[in-house]
Length: 181
Ligand SMILES: [Fe+2]
Ligand SMILES: [Fe+2]
Image (cartoon, rainbow, N blue to C red; front, top):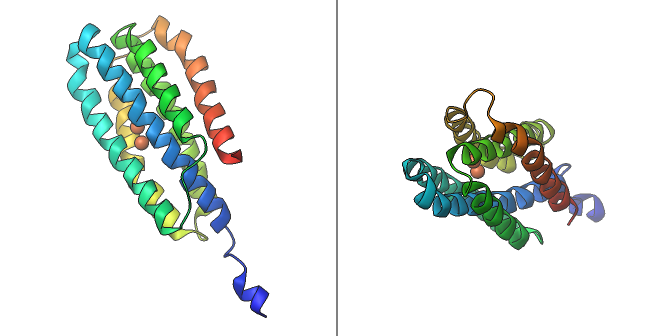
């Protein structure tokens, strides 16, 4: 009987992994915006205020998942530092190409993020309420980043065509890796 009681509640292990990967992902997002802000100050100063606002949201998202990880007694993901360095490099390099490239990067990242958040809510609903509430608390701001950045992309943008596949694939790869580390 003791073994039965000691069994984790179904879904919690998956919830732990998702909270961990989201925490690392939010760190990546903070660093993408930091890299973009650095580049935008030189090249597209009109975007600095908006990017700073978005980074503020990402800092809160990271804190939400960190608090949830600590509550569960789990360490951060092994991919955490990689997400930070990779994110900063992605933000800085794409940022140096200007407003169109910055917006295309944000839209591509957020599109993948929003799809994953939706899937996570589906698999966790009913078996991990704390993870569901952490995820639900960030979705509207991620939607806002996607929508407000889309406005900066001109129809037929070369940056959107060039960057979307690369950035989407990199974001997917980081999430895939994080779920396995
Ligand atoms: Fe976020
Ligand atoms: Fe975001």
